[in-house]
View 1 (tube, rainbow, N blue to C red):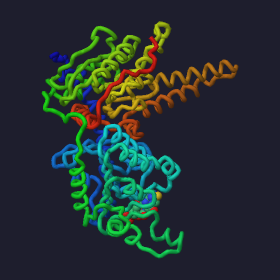
View 2: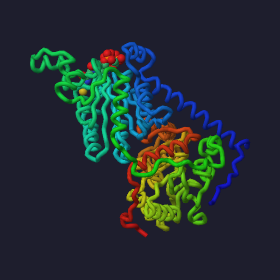
View 3: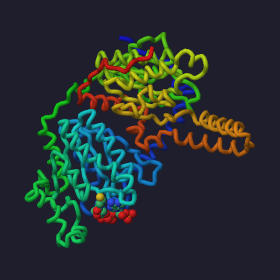
View 4: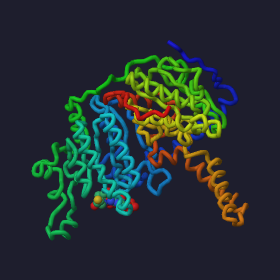
Length: 531
Ligand code: COA
Protein backbone atom coordinates (compact mmCIF):
# COMPACT_ATOMS: atom_id res chain seq x y z
CA UNK A 1 0.00 0.00 0.00
CA UNK A 2 1.02 3.62 -0.56
CA UNK A 3 0.20 5.83 2.39
CA UNK A 4 0.09 9.53 1.68
CA UNK A 5 2.18 11.81 3.84
CA UNK A 6 1.17 15.27 4.98
CA UNK A 7 3.12 18.45 5.40
CA UNK A 8 0.18 20.38 6.81
CA UNK A 9 0.89 22.14 10.08
CA UNK A 10 -2.54 22.92 11.53
CA UNK A 11 -0.95 25.39 13.95
CA UNK A 12 0.88 27.32 11.21
CA UNK A 13 -0.26 30.84 10.32
CA UNK A 14 -1.57 29.86 6.84
CA UNK A 15 -3.53 26.92 8.19
CA UNK A 16 -5.04 29.00 10.98
CA UNK A 17 -6.09 31.71 8.51
CA UNK A 18 -7.59 29.08 6.20
CA UNK A 19 -9.51 27.53 9.08
CA UNK A 20 -10.89 30.87 10.23
CA UNK A 21 -12.07 31.74 6.72
CA UNK A 22 -13.67 28.32 6.27
CA UNK A 23 -15.46 28.49 9.64
CA UNK A 24 -16.80 31.93 8.81
CA UNK A 25 -18.11 30.73 5.45
CA UNK A 26 -19.63 27.69 7.14
CA UNK A 27 -21.45 29.90 9.64
CA UNK A 28 -23.05 31.85 6.77
CA UNK A 29 -24.17 28.63 5.12
CA UNK A 30 -25.41 27.27 8.45
CA UNK A 31 -27.60 30.35 8.88
CA UNK A 32 -29.23 29.78 5.48
CA UNK A 33 -29.66 26.07 6.17
CA UNK A 34 -31.40 26.97 9.44
CA UNK A 35 -33.93 28.96 7.40
CA UNK A 36 -34.69 25.88 5.32
CA UNK A 37 -35.06 23.80 8.48
CA UNK A 38 -37.46 26.40 9.92
CA UNK A 39 -39.78 25.81 6.93
CA UNK A 40 -42.55 28.38 6.78
CA UNK A 41 -41.52 29.88 10.14
CA UNK A 42 -42.62 29.42 13.74
CA UNK A 43 -46.19 30.61 13.19
CA UNK A 44 -46.89 28.38 10.21
CA UNK A 45 -45.30 25.40 11.94
CA UNK A 46 -47.36 26.00 15.11
CA UNK A 47 -50.56 26.22 13.04
CA UNK A 48 -49.66 23.00 11.24
CA UNK A 49 -48.86 21.16 14.47
CA UNK A 50 -52.03 22.47 16.13
CA UNK A 51 -53.91 20.53 13.45
CA UNK A 52 -52.26 17.37 14.78
CA UNK A 53 -49.84 17.14 11.88
CA UNK A 54 -46.13 16.38 11.79
CA UNK A 55 -43.72 18.60 9.90
CA UNK A 56 -41.99 17.28 6.79
CA UNK A 57 -38.80 16.66 8.75
CA UNK A 58 -40.64 14.86 11.57
CA UNK A 59 -42.31 12.62 9.00
CA UNK A 60 -38.95 11.78 7.44
CA UNK A 61 -37.42 11.10 10.83
CA UNK A 62 -40.17 8.65 11.74
CA UNK A 63 -39.92 6.97 8.34
CA UNK A 64 -36.17 6.33 8.59
CA UNK A 65 -34.64 3.36 10.38
CA UNK A 66 -33.59 4.21 13.91
CA UNK A 67 -30.18 5.92 13.90
CA UNK A 68 -29.93 5.56 10.13
CA UNK A 69 -28.27 8.27 8.13
CA UNK A 70 -30.12 10.83 6.06
CA UNK A 71 -28.11 12.76 3.49
CA UNK A 72 -30.14 15.86 2.79
CA UNK A 73 -29.89 17.07 -0.81
CA UNK A 74 -30.65 20.46 -2.30
CA UNK A 75 -31.24 22.00 1.14
CA UNK A 76 -30.49 25.51 -0.11
CA UNK A 77 -32.60 25.41 -3.28
CA UNK A 78 -34.18 28.78 -3.91
CA UNK A 79 -31.55 30.78 -2.02
CA UNK A 80 -31.35 34.24 -3.57
CA UNK A 81 -34.83 33.92 -5.11
CA UNK A 82 -38.04 35.51 -3.79
CA UNK A 83 -39.02 32.06 -2.45
CA UNK A 84 -38.18 30.47 0.90
CA UNK A 85 -34.82 28.68 1.08
CA UNK A 86 -35.37 24.95 0.58
CA UNK A 87 -37.89 25.18 -2.24
CA UNK A 88 -40.80 24.02 -0.01
CA UNK A 89 -39.48 20.46 -0.34
CA UNK A 90 -37.24 18.42 1.96
CA UNK A 91 -35.30 15.73 0.10
CA UNK A 92 -32.49 13.29 0.59
CA UNK A 93 -31.22 9.75 0.75
CA UNK A 94 -32.14 7.71 3.80
CA UNK A 95 -32.51 4.12 4.91
CA UNK A 96 -36.04 2.77 5.27
CA UNK A 97 -36.53 -0.83 6.37
CA UNK A 98 -32.91 -1.49 5.48
CA UNK A 99 -33.28 -0.06 1.95
CA UNK A 100 -31.60 3.13 0.74
CA UNK A 101 -34.38 5.28 -0.68
CA UNK A 102 -34.73 8.72 -2.15
CA UNK A 103 -37.24 10.63 -0.04
CA UNK A 104 -39.03 13.76 -1.25
CA UNK A 105 -41.36 15.46 1.23
CA UNK A 106 -43.48 18.54 0.58
CA UNK A 107 -43.21 21.13 3.34
CA UNK A 108 -46.83 22.22 3.85
CA UNK A 109 -45.76 25.02 6.20
CA UNK A 110 -44.24 26.90 3.24
CA UNK A 111 -47.09 28.39 1.20
CA UNK A 112 -49.21 25.29 1.69
CA UNK A 113 -46.39 23.19 0.14
CA UNK A 114 -47.09 24.80 -3.23
CA UNK A 115 -44.52 23.96 -5.89
CA UNK A 116 -42.57 27.01 -7.10
CA UNK A 117 -39.88 27.01 -9.82
CA UNK A 118 -37.21 25.99 -7.28
CA UNK A 119 -39.32 23.22 -5.80
CA UNK A 120 -39.71 21.93 -9.32
CA UNK A 121 -36.01 22.06 -10.16
CA UNK A 122 -35.18 20.32 -6.93
CA UNK A 123 -37.84 17.65 -7.37
CA UNK A 124 -36.76 16.91 -10.94
CA UNK A 125 -33.12 16.61 -9.82
CA UNK A 126 -34.24 14.15 -7.10
CA UNK A 127 -36.04 12.07 -9.69
CA UNK A 128 -32.90 12.05 -11.82
CA UNK A 129 -30.89 10.82 -8.83
CA UNK A 130 -33.46 8.10 -8.10
CA UNK A 131 -33.52 6.95 -11.72
CA UNK A 132 -29.79 6.89 -12.39
CA UNK A 133 -28.88 5.27 -9.08
CA UNK A 134 -31.92 3.00 -8.96
CA UNK A 135 -33.18 4.22 -5.58
CA UNK A 136 -36.79 3.51 -4.60
CA UNK A 137 -38.62 6.83 -4.39
CA UNK A 138 -40.86 7.70 -1.44
CA UNK A 139 -42.97 10.86 -1.78
CA UNK A 140 -44.51 12.34 1.37
CA UNK A 141 -47.26 14.33 -0.26
CA UNK A 142 -49.04 17.41 1.06
CA UNK A 143 -49.06 20.29 -1.35
CA UNK A 144 -51.24 23.06 -2.69
CA UNK A 145 -50.01 22.05 -6.17
CA UNK A 146 -48.50 24.55 -8.53
CA UNK A 147 -47.56 27.92 -7.05
CA UNK A 148 -50.27 29.83 -8.81
CA UNK A 149 -48.62 33.26 -9.17
CA UNK A 150 -45.62 31.63 -10.93
CA UNK A 151 -47.64 29.08 -12.88
CA UNK A 152 -46.01 30.03 -16.18
CA UNK A 153 -42.67 28.82 -14.82
CA UNK A 154 -43.98 25.60 -13.35
CA UNK A 155 -46.97 24.42 -15.31
CA UNK A 156 -45.40 23.30 -18.59
CA UNK A 157 -42.05 21.97 -17.29
CA UNK A 158 -43.85 20.55 -14.23
CA UNK A 159 -45.43 17.81 -16.34
CA UNK A 160 -42.06 16.07 -16.09
CA UNK A 161 -42.76 15.25 -12.43
CA UNK A 162 -45.51 12.81 -13.39
CA UNK A 163 -43.62 11.58 -16.47
CA UNK A 164 -40.66 10.74 -14.24
CA UNK A 165 -42.76 8.75 -11.80
CA UNK A 166 -44.04 6.42 -14.47
CA UNK A 167 -40.61 6.16 -16.09
CA UNK A 168 -39.12 5.16 -12.75
CA UNK A 169 -41.82 2.53 -12.47
CA UNK A 170 -41.13 1.35 -16.03
CA UNK A 171 -37.46 1.01 -15.10
CA UNK A 172 -38.47 -1.27 -12.24
CA UNK A 173 -37.72 1.30 -9.55
CA UNK A 174 -40.50 1.33 -6.95
CA UNK A 175 -42.40 4.57 -6.34
CA UNK A 176 -44.38 5.02 -3.13
CA UNK A 177 -46.72 7.90 -2.29
CA UNK A 178 -47.79 8.54 1.29
CA UNK A 179 -50.50 11.17 1.04
CA UNK A 180 -50.69 13.28 4.19
CA UNK A 181 -53.04 15.99 2.99
CA UNK A 182 -53.87 18.00 -0.04
CA UNK A 183 -52.92 16.49 -3.39
CA UNK A 184 -55.31 18.07 -5.80
CA UNK A 185 -55.49 18.94 -9.50
CA UNK A 186 -52.16 18.00 -11.13
CA UNK A 187 -51.04 16.83 -7.69
CA UNK A 188 -53.56 14.01 -7.91
CA UNK A 189 -51.24 12.37 -10.43
CA UNK A 190 -48.58 11.96 -7.73
CA UNK A 191 -50.50 9.06 -6.22
CA UNK A 192 -51.98 8.38 -9.65
CA UNK A 193 -48.53 7.61 -11.10
CA UNK A 194 -47.06 5.81 -8.08
CA UNK A 195 -46.77 2.04 -7.65
CA UNK A 196 -47.90 2.08 -4.02
CA UNK A 197 -50.32 4.55 -2.46
CA UNK A 198 -51.17 5.12 1.20
CA UNK A 199 -53.92 7.55 2.24
CA UNK A 200 -54.93 8.75 5.67
CA UNK A 201 -58.47 8.82 7.06
CA UNK A 202 -59.96 12.33 6.97
CA UNK A 203 -56.60 13.79 5.96
CA UNK A 204 -55.77 12.85 2.37
CA UNK A 205 -57.57 14.87 -0.26
CA UNK A 206 -56.99 13.66 -3.78
CA UNK A 207 -59.20 14.97 -6.56
CA UNK A 208 -58.83 16.62 -9.93
CA UNK A 209 -61.05 19.47 -8.74
CA UNK A 210 -62.36 20.41 -5.32
CA UNK A 211 -66.06 20.99 -4.52
CA UNK A 212 -66.15 24.69 -5.60
CA UNK A 213 -64.60 23.96 -8.98
CA UNK A 214 -66.86 20.94 -9.55
CA UNK A 215 -69.89 23.10 -8.73
CA UNK A 216 -68.72 25.74 -11.19
CA UNK A 217 -67.88 23.22 -13.90
CA UNK A 218 -70.86 20.87 -13.78
CA UNK A 219 -73.21 22.21 -11.13
CA UNK A 220 -72.73 19.05 -9.06
CA UNK A 221 -72.86 19.41 -5.25
CA UNK A 222 -70.10 17.47 -3.52
CA UNK A 223 -67.79 17.45 -0.51
CA UNK A 224 -64.11 16.70 0.06
CA UNK A 225 -64.64 13.20 1.40
CA UNK A 226 -66.86 11.90 -1.38
CA UNK A 227 -64.70 13.54 -4.06
CA UNK A 228 -61.30 12.49 -2.82
CA UNK A 229 -61.13 11.29 0.77
CA UNK A 230 -59.00 8.33 1.81
CA UNK A 231 -61.97 6.12 2.57
CA UNK A 232 -63.53 6.75 -0.83
CA UNK A 233 -60.24 6.02 -2.60
CA UNK A 234 -59.63 2.89 -0.52
CA UNK A 235 -63.17 1.48 -0.88
CA UNK A 236 -64.54 2.91 -4.12
CA UNK A 237 -62.06 4.32 -6.66
CA UNK A 238 -59.22 1.96 -5.73
CA UNK A 239 -56.59 4.69 -6.01
CA UNK A 240 -55.49 4.06 -2.41
CA UNK A 241 -53.89 0.68 -1.79
CA UNK A 242 -53.65 1.24 1.95
CA UNK A 243 -55.93 3.06 4.38
CA UNK A 244 -54.08 4.54 7.35
CA UNK A 245 -55.80 5.83 10.45
CA UNK A 246 -53.29 8.59 11.17
CA UNK A 247 -49.86 9.90 10.18
CA UNK A 248 -47.76 7.42 12.20
CA UNK A 249 -49.89 4.60 10.77
CA UNK A 250 -49.22 5.85 7.21
CA UNK A 251 -45.51 5.90 7.93
CA UNK A 252 -45.66 2.43 9.46
CA UNK A 253 -47.41 1.16 6.33
CA UNK A 254 -44.83 2.94 4.15
CA UNK A 255 -42.05 1.11 6.00
CA UNK A 256 -43.85 -2.23 5.52
CA UNK A 257 -44.23 -1.55 1.80
CA UNK A 258 -40.46 -1.01 1.50
CA UNK A 259 -39.77 -4.11 3.59
CA UNK A 260 -41.83 -6.17 1.11
CA UNK A 261 -40.19 -4.82 -2.04
CA UNK A 262 -37.59 -7.57 -1.91
CA UNK A 263 -35.18 -4.88 -3.03
CA UNK A 264 -31.47 -5.52 -3.39
CA UNK A 265 -28.64 -3.21 -4.25
CA UNK A 266 -26.86 -4.25 -7.40
CA UNK A 267 -23.47 -3.72 -5.79
CA UNK A 268 -22.01 -4.10 -2.32
CA UNK A 269 -22.96 -2.18 0.81
CA UNK A 270 -20.21 -0.11 2.44
CA UNK A 271 -17.67 -2.34 4.15
CA UNK A 272 -15.82 -1.58 7.37
CA UNK A 273 -12.73 0.32 6.33
CA UNK A 274 -9.68 1.83 7.91
CA UNK A 275 -10.28 5.54 8.50
CA UNK A 276 -7.83 8.06 7.04
CA UNK A 277 -4.61 8.48 9.02
CA UNK A 278 -5.10 12.23 9.41
CA UNK A 279 -7.98 14.00 11.17
CA UNK A 280 -10.96 15.27 9.18
CA UNK A 281 -10.73 18.46 11.24
CA UNK A 282 -7.65 19.41 9.21
CA UNK A 283 -9.84 19.72 6.11
CA UNK A 284 -10.86 23.14 7.39
CA UNK A 285 -7.25 24.33 7.25
CA UNK A 286 -6.16 23.48 3.71
CA UNK A 287 -7.85 25.91 1.31
CA UNK A 288 -6.19 29.35 1.38
CA UNK A 289 -8.67 32.20 1.96
CA UNK A 290 -9.79 33.78 -1.29
CA UNK A 291 -8.08 30.93 -3.20
CA UNK A 292 -5.12 33.23 -3.66
CA UNK A 293 -2.59 30.42 -3.86
CA UNK A 294 -2.66 26.78 -4.95
CA UNK A 295 -2.83 23.91 -2.46
CA UNK A 296 -1.88 20.27 -2.70
CA UNK A 297 -5.03 18.17 -3.17
CA UNK A 298 -3.16 15.17 -1.74
CA UNK A 299 -3.69 16.85 1.64
CA UNK A 300 -7.43 16.50 1.00
CA UNK A 301 -7.19 12.99 -0.44
CA UNK A 302 -5.17 11.86 2.59
CA UNK A 303 -8.08 12.89 4.81
CA UNK A 304 -10.93 11.29 2.89
CA UNK A 305 -9.76 7.92 1.55
CA UNK A 306 -9.48 4.67 3.47
CA UNK A 307 -6.23 4.44 5.41
CA UNK A 308 -4.92 7.48 3.42
CA UNK A 309 -3.86 4.85 0.90
CA UNK A 310 -3.53 6.31 -2.62
CA UNK A 311 -1.77 4.85 -5.65
CA UNK A 312 -0.95 7.76 -7.89
CA UNK A 313 -0.83 7.29 -11.66
CA UNK A 314 1.57 9.35 -13.80
CA UNK A 315 2.75 11.42 -10.81
CA UNK A 316 5.63 12.88 -12.82
CA UNK A 317 3.58 13.84 -15.89
CA UNK A 318 1.01 16.63 -16.13
CA UNK A 319 1.66 17.49 -12.51
CA UNK A 320 -1.10 20.07 -12.30
CA UNK A 321 -3.60 17.20 -12.17
CA UNK A 322 -3.32 14.40 -9.63
CA UNK A 323 -4.77 11.07 -10.73
CA UNK A 324 -4.84 7.81 -8.82
CA UNK A 325 -6.70 4.96 -7.18
CA UNK A 326 -8.05 4.64 -3.67
CA UNK A 327 -10.93 3.21 -1.69
CA UNK A 328 -13.54 5.19 0.18
CA UNK A 329 -15.68 3.40 2.77
CA UNK A 330 -14.56 0.27 0.97
CA UNK A 331 -15.63 1.39 -2.51
CA UNK A 332 -12.92 1.61 -5.18
CA UNK A 333 -12.58 5.07 -6.71
CA UNK A 334 -10.40 6.76 -9.27
CA UNK A 335 -9.59 10.32 -8.26
CA UNK A 336 -8.83 13.31 -10.49
CA UNK A 337 -7.79 16.37 -8.47
CA UNK A 338 -6.47 19.69 -9.72
CA UNK A 339 -3.17 20.72 -8.18
CA UNK A 340 -1.80 23.98 -9.55
CA UNK A 341 -5.06 25.39 -10.85
CA UNK A 342 -4.41 25.52 -14.58
CA UNK A 343 -4.92 22.57 -16.92
CA UNK A 344 -2.31 22.23 -19.67
CA UNK A 345 -2.27 19.81 -22.61
CA UNK A 346 -0.42 17.18 -20.60
CA UNK A 347 -3.04 17.26 -17.82
CA UNK A 348 -5.88 16.97 -20.33
CA UNK A 349 -4.25 13.97 -22.01
CA UNK A 350 -3.51 12.38 -18.66
CA UNK A 351 -7.14 12.85 -17.59
CA UNK A 352 -8.47 11.29 -20.81
CA UNK A 353 -6.24 8.25 -20.37
CA UNK A 354 -7.17 7.90 -16.69
CA UNK A 355 -10.90 8.13 -17.42
CA UNK A 356 -10.47 5.36 -20.01
CA UNK A 357 -8.63 3.20 -17.47
CA UNK A 358 -11.44 3.69 -14.91
CA UNK A 359 -13.94 2.60 -17.54
CA UNK A 360 -11.93 -0.54 -18.27
CA UNK A 361 -11.96 -1.46 -14.59
CA UNK A 362 -15.55 -0.29 -13.93
CA UNK A 363 -14.34 2.07 -11.22
CA UNK A 364 -16.36 5.18 -10.19
CA UNK A 365 -14.57 8.51 -10.53
CA UNK A 366 -14.25 11.32 -8.03
CA UNK A 367 -13.40 14.80 -9.34
CA UNK A 368 -11.95 17.28 -6.85
CA UNK A 369 -12.20 20.70 -8.49
CA UNK A 370 -9.71 23.49 -8.07
CA UNK A 371 -9.11 24.76 -11.58
CA UNK A 372 -9.13 28.15 -13.23
CA UNK A 373 -9.49 26.44 -16.61
CA UNK A 374 -7.35 25.42 -19.56
CA UNK A 375 -4.18 27.39 -20.25
CA UNK A 376 -4.47 30.23 -22.75
CA UNK A 377 -1.80 31.96 -24.88
CA UNK A 378 -0.01 31.51 -28.21
CA UNK A 379 2.32 28.74 -27.09
CA UNK A 380 -0.55 26.69 -25.74
CA UNK A 381 -2.92 27.30 -28.65
CA UNK A 382 -0.14 26.23 -31.04
CA UNK A 383 0.49 23.22 -28.84
CA UNK A 384 -3.12 22.09 -29.36
CA UNK A 385 -4.72 22.97 -26.01
CA UNK A 386 -8.17 23.03 -27.65
CA UNK A 387 -7.70 19.49 -29.03
CA UNK A 388 -6.43 18.21 -25.73
CA UNK A 389 -9.13 19.88 -23.64
CA UNK A 390 -11.66 18.46 -26.09
CA UNK A 391 -10.14 15.04 -25.55
CA UNK A 392 -10.69 15.33 -21.79
CA UNK A 393 -14.23 16.62 -22.25
CA UNK A 394 -14.91 13.81 -24.73
CA UNK A 395 -13.69 11.26 -22.17
CA UNK A 396 -15.76 12.72 -19.33
CA UNK A 397 -18.88 13.05 -21.50
CA UNK A 398 -18.85 9.48 -22.76
CA UNK A 399 -17.53 7.73 -19.67
CA UNK A 400 -20.27 5.53 -18.21
CA UNK A 401 -18.83 4.80 -14.77
CA UNK A 402 -20.52 6.94 -12.11
CA UNK A 403 -18.91 10.32 -11.47
CA UNK A 404 -19.04 12.41 -8.31
CA UNK A 405 -17.77 15.99 -8.30
CA UNK A 406 -16.72 18.03 -5.30
CA UNK A 407 -16.04 21.71 -5.92
CA UNK A 408 -13.36 22.46 -3.36
CA UNK A 409 -11.88 25.66 -4.75
CA UNK A 410 -12.00 27.24 -8.18
CA UNK A 411 -14.10 25.67 -10.89
CA UNK A 412 -13.93 28.01 -13.84
CA UNK A 413 -14.42 27.95 -17.57
CA UNK A 414 -14.05 24.80 -19.63
CA UNK A 415 -12.02 23.38 -16.74
CA UNK A 416 -15.35 23.06 -14.88
CA UNK A 417 -16.64 21.01 -17.82
CA UNK A 418 -13.54 18.81 -18.14
CA UNK A 419 -13.72 18.09 -14.40
CA UNK A 420 -17.31 16.85 -14.79
CA UNK A 421 -19.31 19.96 -13.95
CA UNK A 422 -23.05 19.77 -13.46
CA UNK A 423 -23.86 19.60 -17.19
CA UNK A 424 -21.73 16.45 -17.52
CA UNK A 425 -24.17 14.43 -15.44
CA UNK A 426 -22.22 13.66 -12.27
CA UNK A 427 -24.35 11.33 -10.16
CA UNK A 428 -23.75 13.76 -7.30
CA UNK A 429 -22.10 17.16 -7.08
CA UNK A 430 -21.21 18.84 -3.81
CA UNK A 431 -19.44 22.08 -3.00
CA UNK A 432 -17.28 23.20 -0.11
CA UNK A 433 -17.99 26.71 1.22
CA UNK A 434 -14.70 27.76 -0.40
CA UNK A 435 -15.84 26.87 -3.94
CA UNK A 436 -16.18 29.47 -6.67
CA UNK A 437 -17.54 28.79 -10.14
CA UNK A 438 -18.17 30.91 -13.21
CA UNK A 439 -17.30 31.19 -16.88
CA UNK A 440 -14.10 32.93 -15.76
CA UNK A 441 -12.78 34.86 -12.75
CA UNK A 442 -14.74 38.01 -11.88
CA UNK A 443 -11.81 40.34 -12.43
CA UNK A 444 -10.89 38.77 -15.77
CA UNK A 445 -14.50 38.88 -16.91
CA UNK A 446 -14.81 42.55 -15.93
CA UNK A 447 -11.54 43.31 -17.73
CA UNK A 448 -12.67 41.51 -20.88
CA UNK A 449 -15.96 43.42 -20.88
CA UNK A 450 -14.09 46.69 -20.45
CA UNK A 451 -11.59 45.93 -23.23
CA UNK A 452 -14.31 44.80 -25.64
CA UNK A 453 -16.38 47.95 -25.07
CA UNK A 454 -13.29 50.15 -25.50
CA UNK A 455 -12.24 48.39 -28.71
CA UNK A 456 -15.79 48.65 -30.03
CA UNK A 457 -15.92 52.41 -29.38
CA UNK A 458 -12.52 52.88 -31.05
CA UNK A 459 -13.52 50.82 -34.09
CA UNK A 460 -16.61 52.98 -34.59
CA UNK A 461 -14.66 56.17 -34.05
CA UNK A 462 -16.87 57.07 -31.08
CA UNK A 463 -15.61 58.86 -27.95
CA UNK A 464 -14.94 56.43 -25.09
CA UNK A 465 -16.18 57.35 -21.60
CA UNK A 466 -13.28 56.03 -19.52
CA UNK A 467 -14.79 56.97 -16.14
CA UNK A 468 -18.16 55.45 -16.97
CA UNK A 469 -16.45 52.27 -18.24
CA UNK A 470 -14.49 51.94 -14.99
CA UNK A 471 -17.73 52.17 -12.99
CA UNK A 472 -19.29 49.46 -15.17
CA UNK A 473 -16.15 47.36 -14.79
CA UNK A 474 -16.37 47.55 -11.00
CA UNK A 475 -20.08 46.73 -11.01
CA UNK A 476 -19.57 43.74 -13.27
CA UNK A 477 -16.75 42.45 -11.09
CA UNK A 478 -18.96 42.69 -8.00
CA UNK A 479 -21.85 40.97 -9.77
CA UNK A 480 -19.72 38.07 -11.01
CA UNK A 481 -18.01 37.70 -7.63
CA UNK A 482 -21.45 37.34 -6.01
CA UNK A 483 -22.70 34.95 -8.68
CA UNK A 484 -19.67 32.68 -8.29
CA UNK A 485 -20.44 31.95 -4.65
CA UNK A 486 -21.57 28.46 -3.67
CA UNK A 487 -24.73 29.69 -1.93
CA UNK A 488 -25.94 31.25 -5.16
CA UNK A 489 -25.04 28.19 -7.22
CA UNK A 490 -26.61 25.83 -4.70
CA UNK A 491 -29.69 28.06 -4.66
CA UNK A 492 -30.00 27.43 -8.37
CA UNK A 493 -29.75 23.65 -7.78
CA UNK A 494 -26.46 23.52 -9.69
CA UNK A 495 -25.17 21.23 -6.96
CA UNK A 496 -26.72 18.78 -4.53
CA UNK A 497 -25.56 20.65 -1.47
CA UNK A 498 -22.81 22.62 0.21
CA UNK A 499 -21.03 20.37 2.66
CA UNK A 500 -18.84 20.89 5.69
CA UNK A 501 -15.37 19.79 4.51
CA UNK A 502 -15.12 17.59 7.62
CA UNK A 503 -18.10 15.57 6.37
CA UNK A 504 -16.64 14.96 2.91
CA UNK A 505 -15.69 11.33 3.49
CA UNK A 506 -19.06 10.34 4.92
CA UNK A 507 -21.06 12.31 2.35
CA UNK A 508 -19.09 10.57 -0.40
CA UNK A 509 -19.59 7.24 1.35
CA UNK A 510 -23.38 7.67 1.25
CA UNK A 511 -23.17 8.82 -2.37
CA UNK A 512 -21.06 5.81 -3.35
CA UNK A 513 -23.37 3.46 -1.52
CA UNK A 514 -26.36 4.97 -3.35
CA UNK A 515 -24.47 4.70 -6.64
CA UNK A 516 -23.94 0.99 -6.05
CA UNK A 517 -27.70 0.46 -5.95
CA UNK A 518 -27.36 0.47 -9.75
CA UNK A 519 -24.85 -1.49 -11.86
CA UNK A 520 -21.44 0.15 -12.25
CA UNK A 521 -20.39 -0.40 -15.82
CA UNK A 522 -17.63 1.23 -17.85
CA UNK A 523 -17.44 1.63 -21.61
CA UNK A 524 -14.93 1.67 -24.43
CA UNK A 525 -17.23 3.70 -26.70
CA UNK A 526 -15.83 7.21 -26.66
CA UNK A 527 -16.13 9.87 -29.32
CA UNK A 528 -13.36 10.30 -31.89
CA UNK A 529 -10.37 11.57 -29.91
CA UNK A 530 -8.44 14.36 -31.60
CA UNK A 531 -4.82 13.42 -31.01
N1 COA B 1 -50.05 28.72 -4.88
C1 COA B 1 -49.56 29.76 -4.18
N2 COA B 1 -49.79 29.94 -2.86
C2 COA B 1 -50.52 29.01 -2.24
C3 COA B 1 -51.06 27.90 -2.90
C4 COA B 1 -50.80 27.78 -4.28
N3 COA B 1 -51.23 26.73 -5.00
N4 COA B 1 -51.73 27.15 -2.01
C5 COA B 1 -51.62 27.78 -0.83
N5 COA B 1 -50.90 28.90 -0.95
C6 COA B 1 -50.53 29.88 0.08
C7 COA B 1 -51.72 30.65 0.64
O1 COA B 1 -52.01 31.75 -0.16
C8 COA B 1 -51.20 31.06 2.01
O2 COA B 1 -50.29 32.12 1.84
P1 COA B 1 -50.06 33.20 2.98
O3 COA B 1 -49.53 32.44 4.17
O4 COA B 1 -49.05 34.12 2.41
O5 COA B 1 -51.40 33.82 3.23
C9 COA B 1 -50.37 29.84 2.42
O6 COA B 1 -50.05 29.16 1.21
C10 COA B 1 -51.11 28.88 3.32
O7 COA B 1 -52.37 28.59 2.72
P2 COA B 1 -53.68 28.32 3.58
O8 COA B 1 -54.81 28.13 2.64
O9 COA B 1 -53.83 29.36 4.63
O10 COA B 1 -53.23 26.97 4.30
P3 COA B 1 -54.08 25.69 4.62
O11 COA B 1 -53.11 24.77 5.26
O12 COA B 1 -55.29 26.00 5.35
O13 COA B 1 -54.49 25.07 3.20
C11 COA B 1 -54.18 24.26 0.97
C12 COA B 1 -53.55 24.63 2.32
C13 COA B 1 -53.07 23.85 0.05
C14 COA B 1 -55.14 23.10 1.21
C15 COA B 1 -55.00 25.45 0.40
O14 COA B 1 -54.20 26.61 0.46
C16 COA B 1 -55.43 25.25 -1.03
O15 COA B 1 -56.45 24.66 -1.27
N6 COA B 1 -54.65 25.77 -2.03
C17 COA B 1 -54.98 25.69 -3.43
C18 COA B 1 -54.90 24.28 -3.90
C19 COA B 1 -55.21 24.15 -5.38
O16 COA B 1 -56.33 24.17 -5.79
N7 COA B 1 -54.15 24.03 -6.19
C20 COA B 1 -54.30 23.85 -7.57
C21 COA B 1 -52.93 23.92 -8.13
S1 COA B 1 -52.76 23.00 -9.61
